[in-house]
Length: 305
Image (cartoon, rainbow, N blue to C red; front, side, top):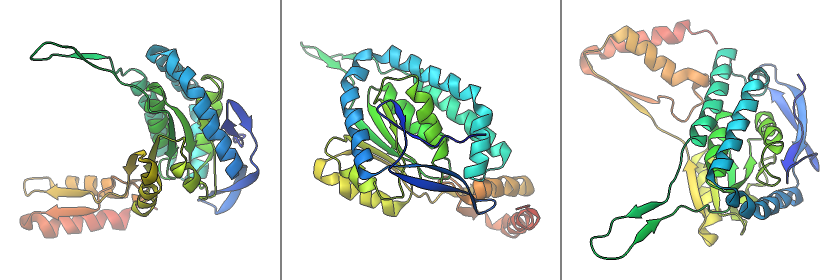
């Protein structure tokens, strides 16, 4: 297949001032070269999002939801392209790539069917209180390499549905899937609503400190999350930081030891263990500790890498 190599800025598919090589992790070889933004192009993306936001908000909830549904339909029609791309740029086996693609589409549809209606809050005395939800403005999304379609989809859909506009920046190791999302969105949403740019891990400071950015949503390392929090502090930006996890499993002595060990092993090592919610610690009842450890070790010894 032909991999999408251009970024989406202000509704147009544009080449970068630089380029970015994408390496197939299975071979270690470059298999695609895509556009990479300059600081000027990153600034253009933010300004396009800022300009587009009032009109996007004015469209109303239901029109925005309908466009997200259309995005999901277009993604589903290109499912095989997304799966093949994920295998090539991220290295997932086909089964996991197909699962992530299906989940990403389902996430967009799920968010598109949610609502935040205005509420009248009962008061014990006279008076009237109304709760209304309003968009923040421009949202910057930054996503990691380990789930290169699901996480961008899960950031883009709720941001756009709520009336925000967006600048989305994928990990430089896995940019193509997010560029494909930008390409699809460019033919559906108004110009500037969703901008997708790539970088070499060198534009984050511009985006997270930008005075016209109201919120940053980031999934990645704790160290980078600290930098984003510091960068956004002067303007009191809203932040959503999904950082490194330390997930635990508790195994009691009434379980089927071998079946449970099989499930724990799968939960720890799916996606080669590179997942924020992968099991990282296991607490096992003393009575079955030795048997459980041996069963877990047997799964490790027989796993095919």
